[in-house]
Length: 114
Length: 114
Image (cartoon, rainbow over all chains, first blue to last red; front, side, top):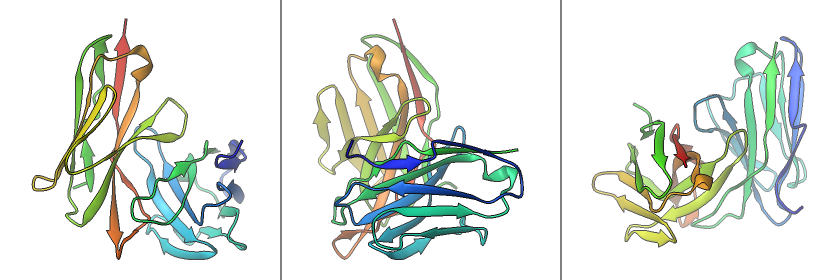
C-alpha cells in the first residue's frame, strides 16, 4: 500500500496521559499536514510541514501539542496531559507542493480521552 | 461566521434523483476549491477540484461563482453508493504555490435510498 498510513488507528487514554501518533506520508510527497476532526464537523487544520520545516501552526495547537518531522519523512504528533476535549479523529495528509496540490489523507487516529 | 459554510442536511433522496449542494466561503483570497467525499468513519477523499469555468466528472458537476463566493455540487442519477458526507473545501495560493492549509466546511450528509 503506497498511501498515507497512520499509527495507531485507535487510542484510548486517561485524562492527563501523554499520547503520540505517527504518520507516514506518500514517499515522494514533501508536504505533510495534521488536521483534527470532531463529530459532525469538517477537519480543522492544525499544522503543516514542508520537508522538515514546520511552516504554520493553528491557534488550535495549544502548548500541549507538538509535532515533528525530523528527517522530512514521517511525522509525529504528541499531546501532553490529554484532556477530554482532545477526543477526536486526528488526520494526516500529504502532498506535493505546487499550485493545485491535492492532499491525500490517511485513515486517521481516533483518540478517546476518558 | 465560519470561513466555509454548508447546509449540513441531511439530504435523503431516492435512487436516480438529482441533488445539489451549496457552499459559501468568506475569504476572498481563497483561490483553490474542492469537493471531498467522506464515508462514515473513513478519511476524506478528493471528489473533484472546482474551476471557475465549471467542470463535470461523469454524474458530478461543480460550479464556482467567485463574485458571490459560492460553490456548488450537482449529482445526477444518484446511486446508493453516493451516500456519504460531502465536504466543501477552499485553499489559498500564494506566489504560485499552494498555501497548504485546507479549510473545510462542516459537510453535507447525503443518504440515497432505494
